Image: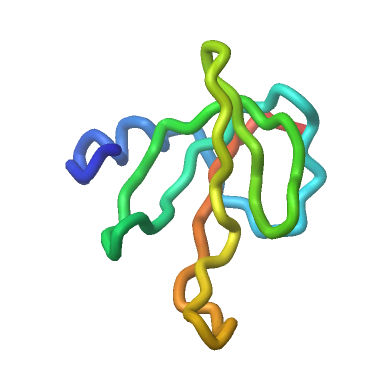
Length: 91
């Protein structure tokens, strides 16, 4: 989890924000902003494995985890949308 704006800008050089749905290819590196415990944070991410129900499954060095596309309140209303970035040369 990175919160330093200077570091985040450096990590996102050469990357573009994408909108979902997006035709990810398996193995593409995805960096992202999401919210956890009420705080927004940036992650250098991992390699795309597949889409799950409103989540993206990523993997890095044998470890896998999911990133929520939308974070909803108890009523089901979207309160936060995660932001995803891929390298600008990704096709």
